[in-house]
Length: 165
Image (tube, rainbow, N blue to C red):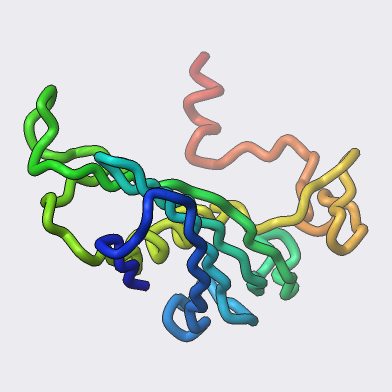
C-alpha cells in the first residue's frame, strides 16, 4: 500500500486498498473476507497525516467451548510522517506513530504498519462476553462449559505442609 505523497495537494485525500486474507491468515487468526483499508491522507506544510480504518470479518475458536465463532474487525489508527531527518528533542525517530522522512520523499509505504496493527488489535482472549455467568455466544453456563470443581481438593504435594502448620 504505497501512497504517493509528492503529488498531493495540501488537502484531504482518500485512498482505498484491499489486503488479501491469505496475506494475514495464520494458524490462530483466520480472516474469512479480504481486509478493507481506507486511508485519509492530510498533507500540510511539514507533515503528512495518514488516518487509517481497517475492517474485515474473521473466524476464531472460542477459548471456552472450542466452537468456531465469527468476529468483526473495525479499528482506526494514525501515522504521522514528518519531514526532517531526525527529532530535535530526542535524537533519532523512536515513536511508532510519528515517522520522520527525508524532505524529498515521494512515496510512503504503510504495508507493515497495517499488518502490525491488524495483529496487535486482535483480542488475546478469544471468548464471547459473559453476562451473569452465561456465555453470550452459546448461551450455556460458563461453569458448565469449563467444568469448574467446587470441591476443596488439596494437592497431595501440599498435604504434608498443611499438616505441619
